[in-house]
Image (tube, rainbow, N blue to C red; front, side):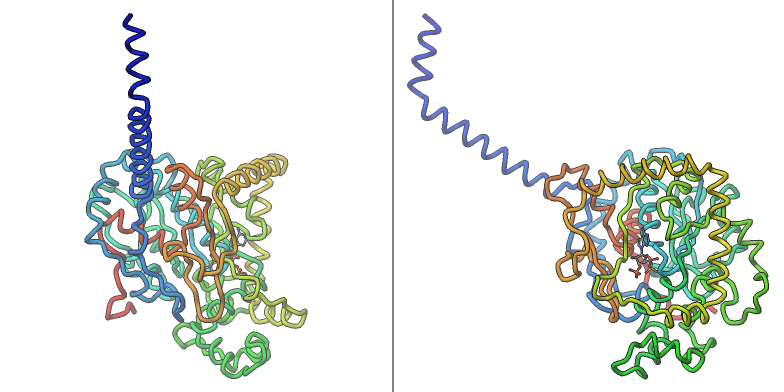
Length: 438
Ligand SMILES: Nc1ncnc2c1ncn2[C@@H]1O[C@H](COP(=O)(O)OS(=O)(=O)O)[C@@H](OP(=O)(O)O)[C@H]1O
């Protein structure tokens, strides 16, 4: 009887019932979509970080990020309260000397991700994104230790190395790592990227007219390069300069500070053996395969690349003899280290890393080599007037958690730095001071 009555009621109100179910479903879809859009675990508030398309003095200018931090206090509180900051770091402290045009932004991105996940305290420059480059590093270039931290865990921004100063501020068990790249490729990349930032390169560009500025520079580099002119540090032996060596004069003898560098750096990564380098890095820092995944950062678009003829290559090597010597030296050290790890074991781990990274790239990356005009401010890498730097689009069909991971994977250096800096200090990255360091 009751069942029959129920069946009659259902039949009588079938249209109204259907309408109610449809309305509730529609409402749930609307609310769900809204939540996904506005509560991403990686809440960068797109549109509030503004990166201009072009500038001539990369990473040093203070006005490149205008960050409206007043609107962000709640987000910061949420982040500070989150479990992210309560996880105990399991990795040793690390200094990564970020050398120029060596693939260093790719390594830095990986360290940013690991550090953020583990609530690490970053040693950031007090002003802008570099430690008062090209001055040699000093402890007072570093921003204050944030409240509640007893020491810095990770330092990975550009600097000109001074080992003694670094050791004054980092814990004794700090792991020191850097990266070198084959000097011809590296110098060509430095020249192209910094054509309008290194005065010697700019003079060559002006003199070149329609000819290749690099070729004109290499025909008589001494006529363009004044070692005493500020900003010319990267104009000759740039890797040696970043490592704090005298990049001007060299008489083929072992550089005075080489022993100190050998003793300080547990690992000098080699860009041409990037995956092998990552495996050794992972071993030192106790990282797992997923943490070692990366995409290449700061890559130039195809039309910003020009093939080098043999004369140009020989001239680059001639002009950058100390870098050539240094690279060959640390390449030998690298393979000695690889042998200690075990070459068979290294090959096996590289294969595992490549397979794991490939899976992650497929999951995250919808499109690579995306030109800057097609990238949102949030994910557009810094551009210079002389080259075009490409970026990535991430996949659309990702869960909230995957979206956070994938965004971080492709996030350019300046944006990630600005985010972590704000997270650590609750304020935007500081501008250049009016009085420069001596
Ligand atoms: N994984 C990996 N392996 C090898 N090479 C890589 C990798 N990731 C980035 N790159 C290349 O490194 C160049 C950018 O270097 P940096 O990130 O150090 O540049 S910067 O000084 O921070 O601006 C830039 O080189 P060029 O394209 O020749 O300019 C990148 O393409």
